[in-house]
Image (cartoon, rainbow, N blue to C red):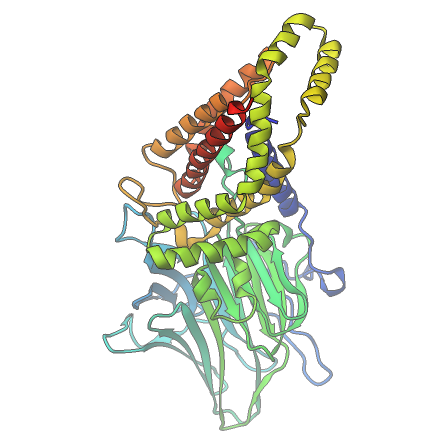
Length: 546
């Protein structure tokens, strides 16, 4: 079993994993049929109604018509140490949210990454409001008034409040306030209700995300990171809600606590709900392009005539950074999507992060982690390399058999099996060690691909971003050279066609790795160099024996 098969196994496993992921996304389990309903045909763009109770009727959350464009009001600009935000007086929507500590790219450090926006190629906004039976309630189609057009978090100020006001005809005054916190990606959305009417006020809070998404195609996007919805409840745990499945079976589920979120590569937006609060999760598709995922209270908030009340819910809008997600409500750490290899990927990231805390550089942390993984698998690798060394030692005898039997493959195979038996060589002796290592390779692949900590993390010299491809292709070329060097240490196939295939493989892998994240290429290159050293040493020992 020669070392080229390691790459064949890796390539096959990678392809199978990518095919499985594509199949899983295409055939993702929709929400349970017992808790799913379709939106009434008379309201093609409406969010499902608040559940009816014996004493309280309900109304639907207003939504744009199927052909209606997203309306605009006045824009309010907000600047904090974490965000550059835009709030629209139309609905009080959060229409823009740029992350100041995460530039668009390493070569544009002054341009913050736009997580939410209502302009450009993709729409992603957060909407919220109140609904009820009697009176006029402020929802995401209500026009608010604002006290100022610009807000900024001042030095020494820990919180920044941005109020929006709406006065209903029945005398009820609503103040919708966004509360930004220093050093935090959590934004509170608060409704203060002053009931100046002569009747008891009763209302329900709702919050939702609305976004569009066009999947990117092309060869190097065979395994794109997941972009779509996700929900979490203590009862049903974590569940993805793919955007392309929302139109088939809109979500309608009664829950207690949990959260609803929109995920994308490296970042997430999530409505985080009180753990003891009853809500309904819902989804919808507007205009065949805009996907809605949200929640609404199922128990009303009631305020007596002349009384005041407050309702508050929090949004997390930021990076999928492990140490931050651990401080948020239960299940938020699951938004870092390692797929079915999470059980391996999570410990690998923990170890990688621990090394980074010691070294302060993710590139060197990857190298140290590679050495540690290689040390753990040394006994298994040694078994595989010994098998290859024995096979290499038998090359002259195998070549003689090839010359003797020519194209008679049946007799050649019989003679080779007899040779293996005589020399006490198991030609498959290196397979099991390689198969055991493949899940670790794939798990680390997802760690390096999915972890926002790698985003724009420099290593040395020309490598300014370990999550991006090598701009000068130096690492992929070194990796290709190392593969070629490994081939020279391996037993060469007897069959000429196989020889040609194996000679092409370094060039094929080099071409593929040209577009891989440089952190992944760094891992694979270091692994190759260590493998060459280990294989060379074992081959010398085996060939030196009489």
